[in-house]
Length: 250
Image (cartoon, rainbow, N blue to C red; front, side):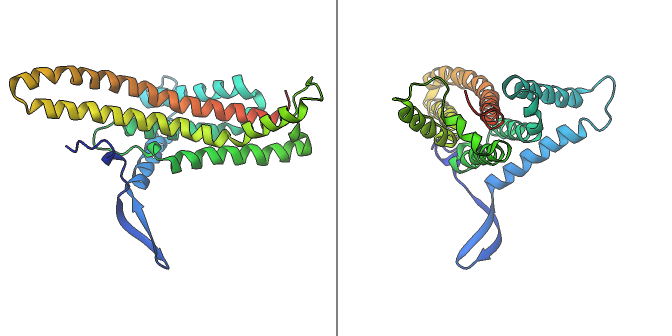
């Protein structure tokens, strides 16, 4: 087992796909695990609901609970009008959740530990908010940056802060997910390496390895919770941002 906590995040080319000039495009381990996540989601959503039994089985129950959970999240944050974005939010939630959970399996790869992936997801949300906001509201979308009831002498400062906050959304949206998953996996790897190192130090080392082993078990349980919470936080922030596009203004 490698003890380097950063080694687990290395992108590995599995096989070449195409070559454009001097640039080679390859199918990587990151792409492979994204494909695995998509396959799992399709199995759950399509395979689990194929029979549509009155008494649902396990897969159908999970699929229905996932649907209701995301639907309730959208309704509570963006209202009924937000349900038109249900496919988008559901896809983001399930994709992030499955990728996070798959990444907790030993010797697998966690795609969300790479900022390029989380930034792409966050930018897709940002672009959707911009496009739909202007398409639905026109120039009234700029009301989002002009809070009501603000004295005129501080309005320029408030507008600047609102615009800066809006522009920084993709950064905070992506870094939050990336940093939490990266930090959790590094911590797990560090404590797991302590178990290996202490186990090679004789009987006393094996006894001492009990503590980091207990911590690894506890951290793994915590990471399971974090995997769900980060998918939920990403989804609910997406709903809040979409609500701004549907109902600009304060």
